[in-house]
Structures are given as structure tokens and as C-alpha cells.
Amino acid sequence: MGPIISFRMVEMTIQFGMCNIAPFAFGVYGAFLVSTINSDLEGGYRMGRIALESMKRLNAFEIIPRLYSTIYSMASETVFSTICHNPINIFTDKVSFVDNFIID
Image 1 (cartoon, rainbow, N blue to C red):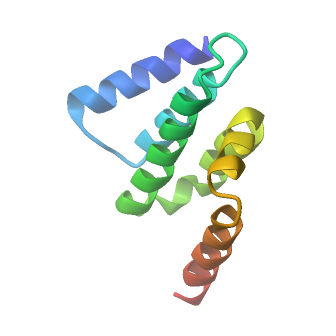
Image 2: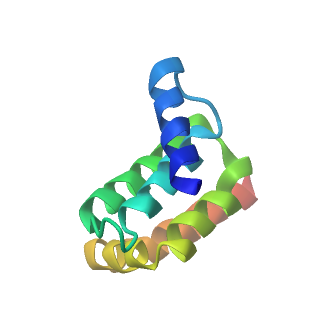
């Protein structure tokens, strides 16, 4: 049931435009791509990056816990893929993002 809902959310985002919950839809779709059914690590990585970048552009900070738990916890292959692509930047990006969020 989860993949069907995420597909529908992505489809509605493409059809009607972005909203604050759209990055979560991209994250769930990325988690589905890296699942054992598909094993598309590159596609999951790309969708995870799209989810994070669209969250920043939309200033949708209310979905940070939901999006991070989807991308970095539920899709452990995405974590591995992200670390392989950005071994240092993954941690420095999080620290600087949290510092900027707390200071502002």
C-alpha cells in the first residue's frame, strides 16, 4: 500500500505542482527505489537528493524529521550510497544546516 500512495503523491506533485509535503513524497519514492524489489541505488540516491533540495527551496522545515527518517533510516542502502558519494559532506551539511536553523 505504501508504494502506491507514494506513486500517487509524486504523480499529483507533477500534475498540480509543489507543496510542502512533496519532498516527503520524493523521499518515500526514493526509499522504494532502493528496496529489495528494485535495488536501484542510483535512482534512490537521486530521489533522496531531490527530496532534500526541494525541502530547502520550499522552506518546508516542518517535515525535517519525517524526511530524514525516511531517507536515512528506512532506506539504509540510501545511507550507504550517500556516504559513498559524499563521505565528508554528509556530516558537515547536517551540522551547518542545524547551526543556521538554530541561529536564525
